[in-house]
Image (cartoon, rainbow, N blue to C red; front, side, top):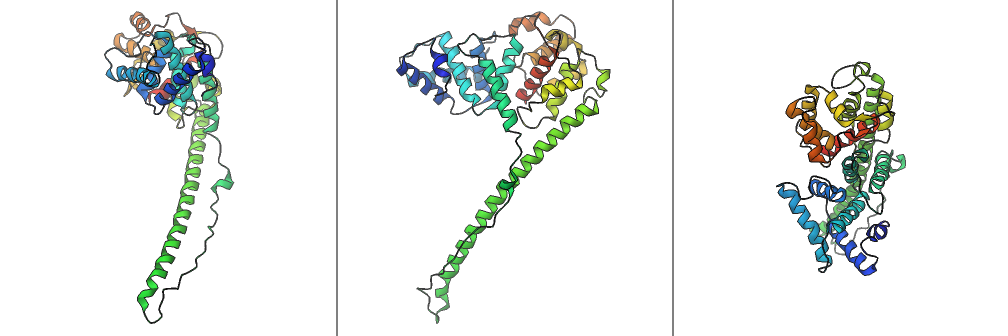
Length: 353
């Protein structure tokens, strides 16, 4: 049982037996993880304006049905309710944080820098941030060279000549088969060790390449799209433009812990406030079209991308504002630091891959 679950569920009940049955439902539901499942859980936990079951979205509706079934299977007497659903959804997300970084990414993007709040006995967003910090460091740890070294296998072979007759050559077949079997086992062991070492080296090279690409970008002081010097990009454009560049160069999710530092070094300010709607209006039509290519943003888990979708429908200006606010439930006056906005957009891109 997750150590935070008793505190999380205490608002519903402090009965140990009931809590155990609810946790059994959590474990059953977390047996596998899909994007639509994460989407449904994030909507449920944050009580977002877009409903957990979606608007005529069969995949989300099916996930919500499976969610309720997991808990009713564990306890047929359970009484479904909005608050209990919210708390149990948060519990499932907590359990996913243990091994699935993209779930934590989705929770932080849904929170949208505090624009959406989730009233729970625990701080779900902080738990997600802590999980991301752990994965960002753990997935970039350099391999121990001692683990890469392939040691020579030790083996022995003692032929069994008990059935061999020197005058009958065919009787030697069993001895040769024994030898072949032993050698095959040794080669299989060597190949397995070689494959493990190769994977470690490939992963290390992947980490080094990503690190080099990110550093080259920030020290080169030139954006990927638009192809301009950092100094030529306006302050309101920088959060989204630079976040997208870094996301394109990121190959290991959820990205390194150095992303905020890289954004700051590129010129994204950590002080002051910038409205989401102003940042979205600041970028060009060509840039927005490229960002949305082959992507289907969600108003719940990727609200900044969804703002770009609404802006594309009418063009830059204020005509799209009301529709975006009504669908996402996010206030038009929501303003956060440019650096926080950039990091959120960076995570949305990783989530939408």
